[in-house]
Length: 75
Image 1 (cartoon, helix red, strand yellow):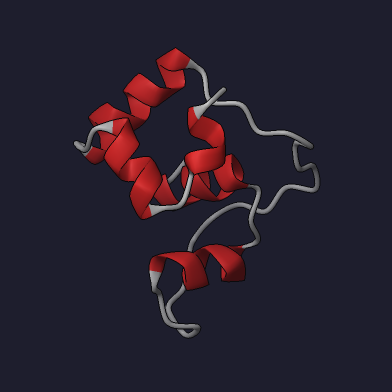
Image 2: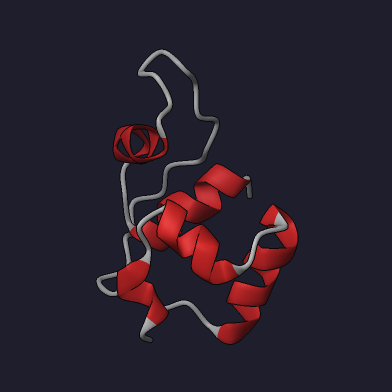
């Protein structure tokens, strides 16, 4: 799973919505695998937060702020 796929699923966004959110141009390919199911309410576990921090090498609150994940910080 790519970083972009991980963030797209976390936010429950389509590929184009994620591209707009992070400033990618429409012509920039995002190689992710589309799946039919979208969770009704995404939840970020402590373990998953730590994995994101390690993968992006950024503390989760800063990563969440950059990608507008504030709704997930309270869970």
